[in-house]
Length: 435
Image 1 (cartoon, one colour):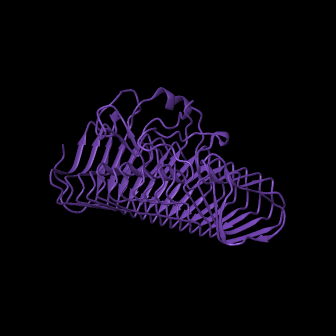
Image 2 (cartoon, one colour):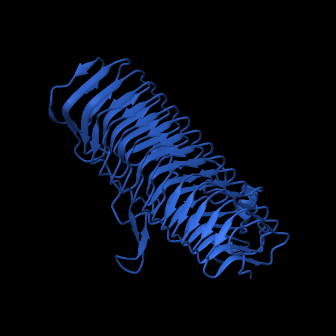
Image 3 (cartoon, one colour):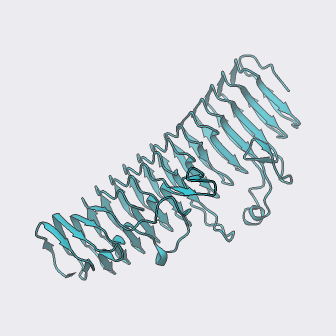
């Protein structure tokens, strides 16, 4: 069916194996109580190519490969649709490829390629592999959509910039990759995520979304498999909840200048994992009961960590250096952990409140030597109380520990080994327990 003028479709259920193609600009399609049904999950429900100013309201689409496939189109709006039951890779099988190009885009509710100035609002894209797939898009407004219970990604950004994502729900986006050893051996998550952000997707705002119980909550990757940098930079994450991930609430690796403010990352393996990133602001977030760490960063540079709450994590903040020739070539300035400001945070009942160490594997055991030693960290005005260890520095130089309240930590308030020219000044509470 080709639609070339504004239309209100007659309510009903229609089996249309080849779906609908929109072939005119500036039209409106009203489709309340209309359901389109595909036959083999191999074709598209609604197709648009090089269209402008089209509005689609209220339609339901099921059993296609992709519910909608839109390319080179601007000023489109999709509101109040229900698109479910699109093509899904068999569960408990593959580890996902987060780098698939547009021509190999997987199944999902909507796929946007080279689109600008879209409005996607109040839709339901649940119970399939993917909700929203975007490639080389700009200035999207994606608000109030339900993208839950998907086995791939709730919302996916690939080279998508200057867009706004607010009040979307992308919960339970997870999968399991079975491995040798039986049905219960494998990887929970397999690179599924509530939000996947890759390949230079920058200057986006993520406000008040949920990505709970996902393989990851928010997953940003800024380095291609061939070693080419593609940072997802200058993004804002504010008021989101990425709790209960078996892996990471907020992962943002090989990126720059991202801001994380007033988010929740509770009961994950890691609340934040930001390896080889630079100049992040992590402010006023909550990290409770994470198994490994609230914040874990390898070779991170110039972070500002302010006014956060760390409670009952394996580590509050876990920083370390490690050596990788590939990383040295791609990011020569990410040579170690350095120049952090950790200020006015609360650390209560963690294993280690703050641990900074050289030549580590995941920050907790000896790793490959060769990285520069961590240096020039500033730890000021924090409350560090009732942890196993307050502050632990190992082969970390030129640190400043000043004006903190450090009290009642079980094994040591401050433990230092093989550190050069560290300054410990004007801290309240007991400062004993040096190693």
